[in-house]
Structure formats: C-alpha cells, structure tokens
Length: 233
Image (cartoon, helix red, strand yellow):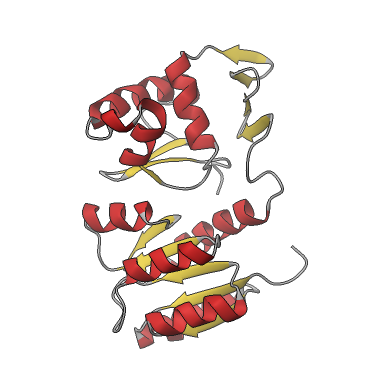
C-alpha cells in the first residue's frame, strides 16, 4: 500500500469523533468523519473509502440500512462500531454485508487490530484464495483438498474441509452461522446450527494445538465463526 488507506468514520457521537478520528490519523490513515447516514452514503459515492467504520444508531438512517446501501455500490470492508451488543443486531449487520462488529465501549488497540486485518485482506493480492492459502503454520491446498502442517497432511473429512474452505475464503472475517450452514449444507440446514457446532468442534481438534484455547478458529458467541490467518494479530 503506497498511499494512506482512506477510512470513513460514520458516528454521530462527538466523543467518538474526537477520540477515534485522531487515533486513526495518528496511525497514518486518511480519515473522513461524518455524523449521518446521508453524509456517509454521499462520501462513499464521491470519495470511495478503502474501509468504513459505521455506527448503527445514526440520527437519520438506520445503520443497517446504510450498510445495505453501501454494500450495493462498494466492496470496501465495513466494521460496525455500536453499543448494540445483542445477537440479532450483530447477525443482521453481518448478513447485510458488514465484515466485522466491534461493541462499544471498545479498546483502541482492538479496533486498530480489526482495521489492520480488514485492510490487509482488502489490499492483499491473495484476498481470494487460489491454489493455496497460508494459515499460521498450516497450508490449505484448495486444489487437492488438503491441509498441511510441517510437510505432513492433517487428515480432514470432506465436510471438515468444506467448512475450512468456506472460512478460508473469508479469512479474518466473521461469518454468521446461517451463512456457513447455507454454504456447507444448503438452504435446508440454515435453522440447524447444531450441525455446525459439532463440525466446528471436530475441526478445532485438528487445527488447534490446544482446542480448549483456540487461536485459529474463533467463535463470536451466538453469531458465527472467524478463521484467523495470523494468530499473532
């Protein structure tokens, strides 16, 4: 990335504007701050941000509607920054195209880490895995449907690899239970999350050095899963 990434911060809280805007600028980002959904949509159309940090509780247009409209015209990563921590709010935003969800109050370093991950995925030439993808000390070979660690294959069942592949193609992004179920089992299974819980548990036993403290396959409670490419982040 030769130029500073352009971040659009959409939040009507003055405290957030006064703290988060300068925080992002101090890390070298080109930041535009707006306080309404209408201004956000206008900024997306006119100045094409590389990433959007979006509050849900805007004064004019509901944040989820802003998310839906932005996603219809832009592929820029969207990180929701909201005081709403309910499962339904998270699932709705993620299903409408948000890439991540950070609940207020939040730690500055957590937000910065989520932004780094989203931008790395956006600017990486390998954002859409083709052939192979590196996950920590493991390599996913999509063509041969194999998972390799230290030149040795980790044996996966066909469904375990299907789950891994879906998560890997959306690496470092939260996928909802519903989205994963639809991709792995089809539409008839979207209301059967127990299938996913069992399969994720099986996959964790093969991916993780310590399945009780996962580093790669992380859960967003009651929302979905995220596959982390760099567990040091």
